[in-house]
Structure formats: C-alpha cells, structure tokens
Length: 468
Image (cartoon, rainbow, N blue to C red; front, side, top):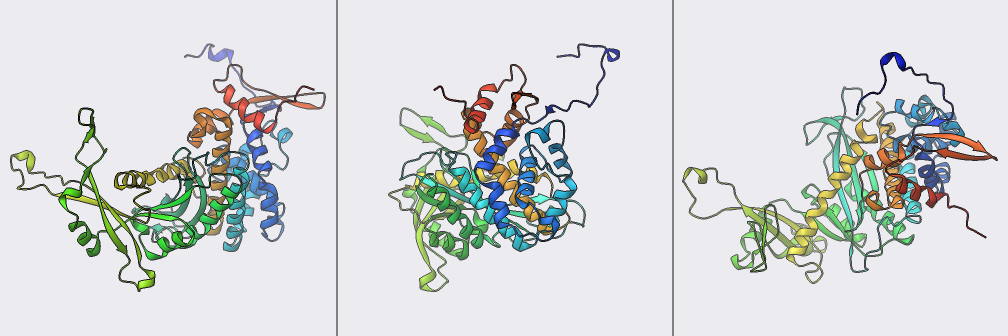
C-alpha cells in the first residue's frame, strides 16, 4: 500500500460534525443501559457535593471511555468529538470525571463494588457469559494478584512488592468454564507492598455470592472450583471458599509436611502425562513424556486445632531436575526430580489424578486477564489519590465485563477474543450520522471486514422490525 497523491494535492480540516470514530459504542452502551448500569450507579453511590451529582451518567461515561480504549482521565476527551452528542447525552469533560473520582472514599469504592457485582448479573441475563455446561461440569473461580507499575512518588499507596517493581497491587477473582472466556467477579486495589493473600478471604467472600447471582440469572449451575497459586495457600482463603460452597484446588508450599507426604508416595504410583514436548505413541496408546503425576491423602493446616484442619488430596507433578554436568559426560547415579504439588478437596471419582493436574494448571488463564486489563484501562493508574485509583479499577472491571459480553453477542471468534481485538474491530468503527424522518442512520465503511459480527451485535440491541 502506498499514498496515491502528491503532498500538494492533499489537505485536511477538522470540521465534520456528523462523524464519530467509535460507532461500536452505540450498541455496547445500549447493552450497558439494558443491564442496569445507570440506575445501579445512581442508586448505590452517595458521593457528596456537586462532584457526585448524576453518578449514574458519570460512571457510564467512564465505562464508555474505557471500552473505547481510554487509559487515563485525559483520554476521556474521546467521548466529546464530532457527532457523539447526537448519539449520547451527558458527554462529560475529563476534568469533571477526574473530580468525581477524586471525591471517592473507601466506602464509596465498596458501593461501586456492589454496582459492579449487580451489573455483571445484569449482563448475565442478556448473554450466556458462562455458556451452557452440564450440571456435573465445573465453574472455575480463579484468584490472583498483579502489580500495576507506576512512576514517581506522588502515587498514594505505591511501593515495591514481590516483583521488585514500584506499583499498586490489584487482586482479582475471575469466573469461567471450560468453554468460555473469563469475566471478573470481584476486585480490590491494595498497596504495592501488600502480601498477595492480604484481603483474599474478603474477596472470595464477595466473588462467590456474585457468581450465585450470575447463576440465578440463568447461567450455568455447575459445581464451583476455586483455584489459587501458592501465595494463597492459607487457612483463611481455603476456608472462605469451602464456606461459600466451593471446592478448592491450591498450589502448596514445600513445607516439611508436604515433603514428607511426597516422600511417602511409592514409585509405582507415578503416571506419565501429556506435558511440554510430550509425544503420543499410538502403538502403545501412551504419552512419551518426562513429566509424571501421583497423589496421596493429605490433611492441610494440621498445626491448627482439629476443627480447622481440612482433609483432601495432595496431587504431585514431578519432572527431572536439570543436571548441568550431564552434558559434560558426568551422568548422575540416579535421576532427581523437581516436584510441584497442589492440594484439592475434589473427590477422586470426579477428577482423577491426571484430570485434577490438568484442571489445576489452567488456573494460569487469569494471567491473560491481567495482561488484557494492562493493555486497556489499567495501562496506568491515572490519579495520585488511592481511592480514585481504586474506583478506576472497579470501573475498568465493568468495562472489561461489558466488552466481553459484547463479544459474546457478536459471536464467532469474538466470544473468546481479547478485549483489544473486540475494541479494534467492533468498537473503533468510524461512522457518519445521517437523519431522515426523525430517525438516525449510521453510515459505516463499505466492505468493513467484520461487518457480519458488528451487525449481529447491533441487532441484538436494536432488533429489526418484524413483518406484520
């Protein structure tokens, strides 16, 4: 592709009042309205003074900006161009939205958490966020934290955490099934130096009722499995999940009790599994792999009183320990292994050893959600005020869930696409606004490659008239 005109033959002018650069916001924000975003925010938020007036419209404006790709308060100006005011009312200035966020306290952030939870349930009544799995299938709740890097010392609460990067710590709980992409059920912003497990019990206590609300709206009613990494291996998080009616699958730390349990596993119990670089031998119908799994009975938190101990299974995966001297012609007398163990309360009749290991490893999908958010609204923490950034995180989560729902309604590859892909192909569609007979018509680009998906999303929210 190359430019078709000489420089002297081209000029520009910013003077067209009937153009918009993100026509996909029309069906998406209609979806947000139908899911109750405006009313929920208006009813639940009690931000004082004139800064908190029209809270529903201001929260919706923040969500709209984030859906369209805003990752700072200044970026909210993209809501105020061309014909946007012909499609939407109350297109607030970035300064107004910034003042609104800075008026939040921790209590207001918790109110916004309640809005996000109920908004997700509203989205669940309009799209199959969890698909239609069988009753015996699992609904997965994955919990993890991530560091959002910040720069400078003006960011309230920022610090150096486990990653060695100066930032703020976001704790998330996602919900998914084996056939659906994750949505976010709970979130919490913490100081950058916070321990990973800090506040996890409360987050799980919030996430499980949110999932029940989602299921009450017609989503999957399968059994629930909470998956954690070793940072959350503690009585508080595990007991909170069990108290909420979920099963648990959590990576354990190699403490003396775990090492003793692993040492007691007989050599004949190890089973070869599909793993990195594995090859399937069709002749013997087995995997040729260097990874193996086995399990043993295990009681977690045995140092606590009897009533607080939790019995289950310790599933262990082992792979050969790398021996640098082996390539120098000095093989070891016997092979040593690295062990990766996790504790689960799921019955072996439901998930055998191999299936339990494979299921637990898929907890890593939450890292894709973290990356997705950092490629969107969480590219920055826009304010120096911690409570404003906390509210920004909750709003970013609502924008993520809204975009995910729009992708599901668009169907096809968009049901599992990254939100950046949905934004680029379905949201950032330029359009010219025309009016005829008191009706608005959007003229979109001819031969748009994703026309069918865009039309499918639009017709979910604006059904064509049915013949008499």
